[in-house]
Length: 453
Image: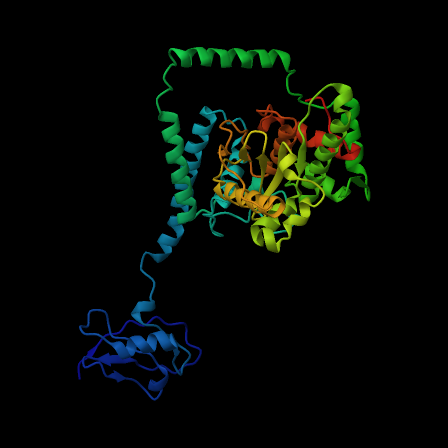
């Protein structure tokens, strides 16, 4: 009888007995007494379909012959270039992703990026995390979920894209490159003429006057205060309080370089903003200076609003002692999925919902939820619908942007502090973050905001 050949890949036998396993042209398996325990596949090239064998392969997988050999079908055999492919593919994608990152880095440098390449890689990985295209095989873990950011560590600067193909990393970089190339290659803005030219000249003149009047943004604390900061960082078991908020020595270390801020630091800073606003309101008549009437909601306000809503979150009780509609501005720190801090504000004085994001992400959900909150609060307190006529969703075009994956909390605190003083622009940039971290330590340990900026 003529038999067709079969491809068998064997593991070295564990016994001395060998058995011949073949398949005939009529698709009738011929085997030894161990036939019932084997899966025998036809040779490549034999015509016809073999549904029973295919089902058996899926169901049983591999069968072990009586002598210990593992019999594999041709469907299970690796391709002849499989080993070479596995070796060369990671190298190819490592090179490809690196070239894309390098090109993107050079474009950003032309646009004003001033940090180094290591920080840029951390910023890229962080942006990928926030963009929602993260894959565990693309980027090493950026952030660990935590209701208070208590288990975040200094990892962003060590984040690397995995050296193998992954659609998440590739797509994110391609989209970032496409956007960057379009920006860098776009034609320059046309010169203003007529009324626009006059208005533009006036704006430039106003900016020049502001620069002369306003002192330059500080780069370091005075030597005495800087020495105090080092002393505070060496203290163990110490705590600092402001109103109902408290910060421990462990929390204070969050203000070391390359650390994410937790709720305790953010809310303590908000308490100091409220403390200053209250003191200034009491002394406004004496000083002859009108200041903004602000209120600060803790970070847990946004958490309740987003997860359970106005009614179930019992947010009406948050304003039992005051009327938010009498405030100029309501300040809100926003924690996005335990991964990113941004600042938001309900600006009743200027009729706008504001969002300030140091990563420049889409924050349409912030506007939507805050509008829903204002409407619900107005119905609860005023028993009628809120009039949204003239209100806008505001994004500052030149909002300062972070250049790494861990300074979002510092930016958020400084956004809120500047808004509370009625500032229409922010004088700080990424290069001021080291100074601002040390200044925040001094402020927290003295429970008051400095006035030297």
